[in-house]
Image 1 (cartoon, rainbow, N blue to C red):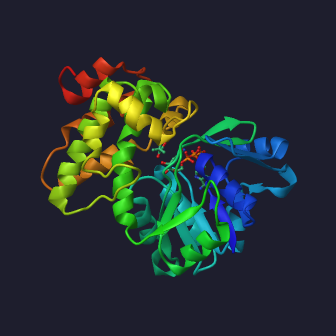
Image 2 (image 1 turned 90 degrees about the vertical axis):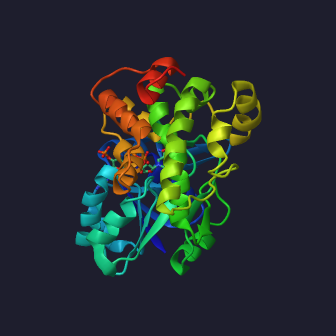
Length: 336
Ligand SMILES: NC(=O)C1=CN([C@@H]2O[C@H](COP(=O)(O)OP(=O)(O)OC[C@H]3O[C@@H](n4cnc5c(N)ncnc54)[C@H](OP(=O)(O)O)[C@@H]3O)[C@@H](O)[C@H]2O)C=CC1
Ligand SMILES: CC(C)(CO)C(=O)C(=O)O
């Protein structure tokens, strides 16, 4: 199976690198800056557990030309949500009809956008990445949080999962990927809080002030999902119903019992924090904005997530990080 990683940044670089280390035939399509770094240093992979591997530059097929999509049997889409439409059009223009497409993106709607643009000629599958990858420069991609990938339980993904085998980017299969995507979206509500805090994940999550806002945005999402008859699946150790209580627990309990089991290392930060740090538009419209959109479809409001979208938009326009008290006031409309 020849696999093309389309949008080979943090996730695509790490996942594709691990799959190549496991013996798969991988080509990467991304941006010139990554191509230059990898040509100079190779593809250097590591994880929170001390695992590491280096693929020499000569073995890594990293290019910027979408025409190479024509050679792929499977395309793994790793662009940010705002770039999905353009990437789908590149797939339609260059890939062979019948080529499978797997989305490893956060959010809910990327798969719908892909299906709408690609039509029935390209089977589109949903994937989920539960862990953080930081690009450390010099071709180094670091997985800073524990967890394994998920994908739709269909023959093409079973073949992929079996070909990869045990790996830091092993693929598990599920028949409830939409439930998993919503379960993951609830966890991704922390991306905005993490980005607004200006801190790596660990210090941000250790602070109950930030966690209260995270829990409030999650409760709001859960109430709306229940009204819409959508069941988010369990992603990680705690199920969605219990998660807001765990998140809002006092620091001593949360930090010593839950955070330790989560296996997050010092270098991990949310992908939205990466976007703010690089001055890019974030995916907030596809995460907290998805909750706001669900509320609108139900004729309701989602004030916490709506305010968080506005705060992230302000940060995209240059507003600085928020301390926990300031974030509580701005997002919850009250003191913590
Ligand atoms: N980073 C993480 O830890 C995690 C990320 N995710 C999700 O994974 C997805 C990817 O995130 P991440 O890897 O962080 O994103 P990155 O921005 O690191 O990587 C995407 C790369 O694709 C490039 N790109 C965009 N469009 C194209 C195109 N048409 N052809 C070639 N290259 C393209 C981007 O360039 P440019 O910047 O120029 O647009 C960028 O370099 C997101 O949906 C994210 O939410 C999920 C879990 C964890
Ligand atoms: C792994 C996690 C939850 C880290 O915040 C993530 O999905 C992201 O950074 O986008």
